[in-house]
Length: 541
Image 1 (tube, rainbow, N blue to C red):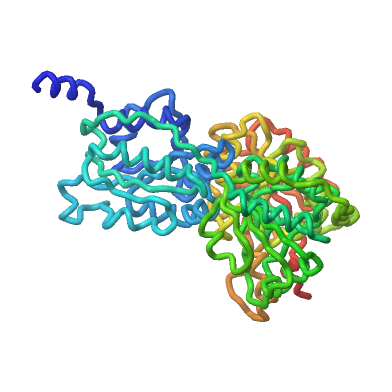
Image 2 (cartoon, helix red, strand yellow; image 1 turned 180 degrees about the vertical axis):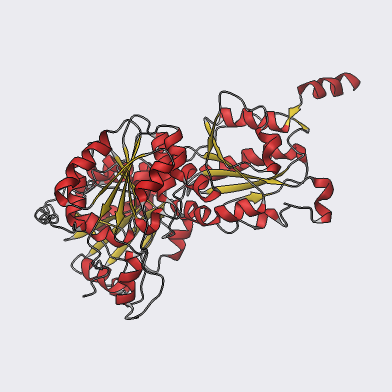
């Protein structure tokens, strides 16, 4: 007995070492953080083989970890400060939840011995704070339980639908002894129900005019090429789901029909002519404004393929097939018969826009589209200009486009930093509005320190363009706080170590973008554009 205890004691390691070994075993090469006093024992004597990525504010830290996880398709590991730091991060934790980003978030907590005294910097009911926007949240009952809790957090984060998880760790836990935890293999693919797939194939075979609605789940699963093969075999029209955060179908493909609105009436109008709608990797449907969705009246048959059981449960009509994208699309492709239908016609792109001063947003987007490298990753947070982007900045498909699924600003600038970390051999381009950029402008510092291949294009229309547009949609007037005069993004960027230039003349735009995209580190191009209110949801102005 004494010999067995001695052997067990020799096998024990510290909670910190057990956690670092797990991080290595999970293939996690970077830890994102902004340090505080309750995290210092975890960060002390940091190992050389794990890269600590410093962000200057917790929301930016989460955004960077989000972009990196989406690029690498492995959970990112984040270390935050206790309650106040987690509070700063909550907006982008919500976005990570909506993005279905795999992420393990740890946060410091005060020492267990003084928690009953409501000590300075303690977090009361720490595990409840980030809920409901994390898939799993815990403060382990004992120090020796921390490695097992972090292992569970990783497995849960990586299970479809992916998402963030949270572990609160008291400051004195890291030095306690614990048994090492071996990393396990946990499968992640879910196969579709065979009978339901046969039902879908029969419906597609009988359909005279089917439509496929693709969502971000296809691109997340690296299944865009499979999606193209399914589309070409069915000869169906292909639409993008409302607010899709990724590009799941090449937008110059001859069957690409366009982008669905987040308005129930406009979406229904777009799909009115189809007798069968198949939604793949997206909800049925994401709306932003009220209205009658006649698509749900029963005249159109609807199928859905999703790895998200909640999305399947809330679909108001049709048949939902729960499966991950690759096995579902592979089976569908093998079961589909050849069809005699003519291939659906795609959308017709508008002619190139004319140059003018002040610079029209259409001209900026068209010029950027021509200037970007063919393998560039575009990260976007310019919601008021998305309709123009969809016309003049078509994306190529797999791993070409990324944005936030939540609608919460302050995500995409740090996410572009994470993308650049995940794609060090490609150029990442962040297209962002002036209002959006100011939420997480400090992310530029991290990018500059690491000399990342990142170009930030700031669309400066001196205000919150989306809010200006919605004030017209909602027919409200004299709304304060929509104008943003006096911002100088060149000085802001230069102050954080970035190359920067401002463009206000259309003739100078293409050279400035070319220079920025070829810069060997971080560059920022501030473009002063026409401040005309953009059109959203078909409103007139």
